[in-house]
Image 1: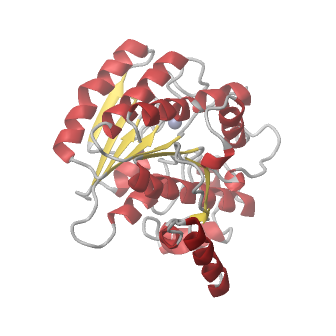
Image 2 (image 1 turned 60 degrees about the horizontal axis):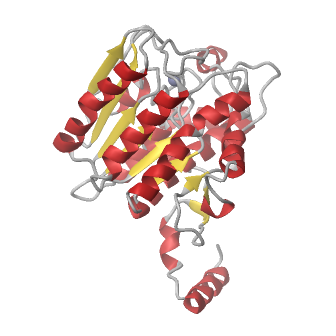
Length: 341
Ligand SMILES: [Zn+2]
C-alpha cells in the first residue's frame, strides 16, 4: 500500500468513524469491516493444478466456500483474504535450506515422492496462501474470539522436509508467530483431531513449553512412525461417534484448565468419517458436527480465542467431501451465535 493510499483510507476511516489504521496489523490483503459475523478466511489461491487423476482432492477448497455461501451459512462480507506467507515467516519453523529449495524447485525426486506431489510453482503459491490463511485466522480470532479458514492443517510437514501431502506446517508457523518474542510469550494449544497423528507439529514443538500439542488419532494409521506430542490419544480402528466424543470430552477441559492457552488452533480434519478413503474410524456427519461444536464451544465459552482449519479429508466425491469439511464452519457459526461473539 502506498502512502497516498493509506492517507486516503485514513480519510475514509475518519469519514466512517472507523479505525482503519489498526487493520495494518493483520496479514490480510483486504480487511472486511462490514460484517460482525463469524470471520471466514479464504483465498482463491488455496488451489493449484495437479496432474489428472491425482489422489489429492485439490478442488475441495473453493467448494467449501461455495457450500457455505449457497447454504447461507455465511455471506461474502464475512470472507477475509489472507496475504501470502513470507519467506521470513516460513523460516521461523522450516530450515533456511528447505525454504529456499522448496520455493525455487530444488527438491529431490525422492523427497517429492514423500510429499505426494510433484513440485510446481503453483504448489508453492498454494501452500504459502494456505499458511497465510491459518495465520490470519489466528490473528482475527485473537481480536474477535473465533475464526475459520477453508484450508489448513498441514501437520505432517517437518522443519527440513515435507511428508504426506504437507509441504509447509501452517499450524507450526502460526503458533511460532503468535508466541512472539516479547515476554510473557503467548501460549498456544494445538488441538489436532485429524485422523492422522500431527507428527510434524509434535516434533517441531517437542521442547517448546509455550505450545502444547494434543493429537487424537487412529493408532494404526499414517504415519507409521509416530512422534511424541504433549498428549497423544491413540484410537483403535472402527471407533464410532459416542466413544470418540467421550474421549475428546475426557481430555479437553482438563487441558484448557491446566495449560491455560491464549489461543487454540483447532485442526478439524474430517478423515475420521466412516466414508473417508484414508481414515479407519467410523464417525458420522452428526458425530463430526457434535465434535466440532463441543471443541469450539468448550474453548470459546471460557473466553479463549479459537482458530479452526479444515485438516484432512479424502474422497473421490469432491462435493460430498467439501460439504463434510464445511461442518466445522457450520458448528462455528452456531458457537458464534450462542456465545454472543
Ligand atoms: Zn489426516
